[in-house]
Image 1 (cartoon, helix red, strand yellow):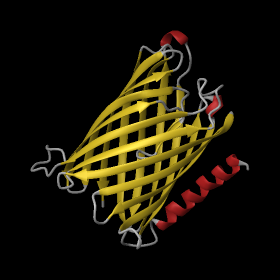
Image 2 (image 1 turned 180 degrees about the vertical axis):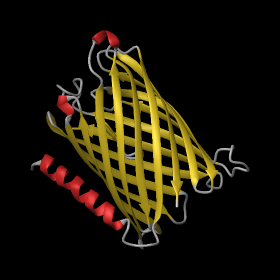
Image 3 (image 1 turned 60 degrees about the vertical axis):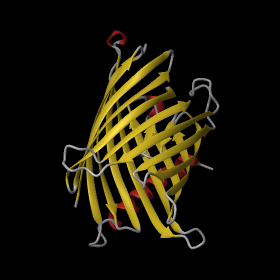
Amino acid sequence: MNYKYCLTHAFAFTCALATPCAFSQQDWRIQSEINFAKSNYSNSQVLDQQKSKGIRLDFDRGDIGSTLGFQNTHIDLLPSLNQPQQNQDNWLASVYKRFPVASLPGQAALKLDTHHLRSSVASQANIYVIAPQASWISAQLPLGLDVSLAHSNYPTMPTVKQYGLAARWGFNQRQDWLEIRQYRIQKLDPIYALNHQQTQAHEIRLTHLFTPNTSWQPKRISMGLERGEKIFFVDMQSQTVYNMTMLNKGGHSVASTWSIQPKIDFTLQFNQNTYNLSNDFKLTTVSAQSSIGW
């Protein structure tokens, strides 16, 4: 099977499907988002810092929806290496469908994410990713389940396959949610994946929901802990592809969201992860997102 041909056309088809459906009816809810991130590498023998900025549009009608997004990233190498800046563009197109399940009281959803990445690095000049996901939320219990799959096509190696499972459980009158995610990445080429043929990782995240009295009080705080190893990873939650040849060895994060106005949200997030390339180093990222709905 020619995976590159299939993934290229899947991305184009999803873009075409996502765009017109968003304007075919008058009862769509639209949300736009802009985001910025600044990252610093400490103890790396190659990388210095990176900056990214992006925009996305989400269209939701309740039972169906779509997302279009674009992210631009600049990566600076250490000045002593005297190498040019690396630039990368990430395009996202996603569609989903929600529907009730008679045999299991609750709501199911099918989602299809497609990504196209273009990088100034020759070995990653064109990357295509297709990532379907099936979800179910119980109507009686504070319980949610996800199953996901991602196929990533890189120019210089076979298609990378990723399998994911997730479970969410709510407590404290559904004001607190505990989420556990497990990932397995297979079909890795050891030449390009730092001598790995497969990796496994898991993530635990705790989220608390508030009822703020003022705009300065957050409406949500989330803390996450990552363990294990992953490379060429597709984050199904943030819809992000981590395509750089670096082995993620785990980390932690915290994020807080405020409602500035009834339809305007602001999110601030801090992440710190340990990576390995030629040695172990840390990547610290501070990011901000602002979204408005209408």
